[in-house]
Length: 229
Image (tube, one colour):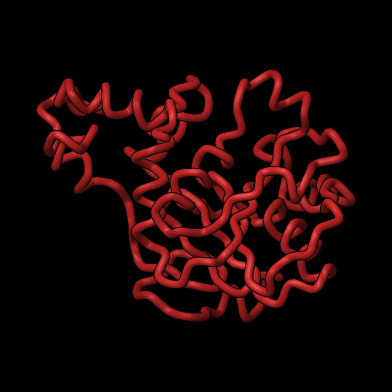
């Protein structure tokens, strides 16, 4: 059955107008024009930590100096205009139908998909306030394109925490102590965590550490954007 998000996105696409500049879209299956798509920032990056580099690499000096508790990092682009503007529309203006094209952009980067996708959860109070979990919507689209299984209930946020973007790097690290719990179900050896934006990596690091403590051997990070702290 086609999801409501997919149906709504297809409805927007029939207008054939770019959702950013309102010029003619790139085609009947796109909501952006070729000019805006060409400006989506996707520079080379480290495939372990996500740090932007001059050329793609499996590791870099940044992650060798400060190792991260995951094994592979995939991202759709960098947190700059126009991708930053689209994510703001999606996340803060409740344009949830943008999950479909954004998820497609991310799925195109994944060459070795994990069998299980776990979206980073919101606390129930924040989920109620926002009306949806943006990471779950992105993960749903990625799962459709990669054939991975999606489980939105396996990892949960048990403690309400201040929004990460309002905190310093040190505060972010302490903010997530004991924030996540796992339900009592077996996990495969390879799991991917899905988030919208990764900055310091504190959120996905806390979740990845929890997964490793429960026997997961390889944890990948799938995110729309990486932005340096």
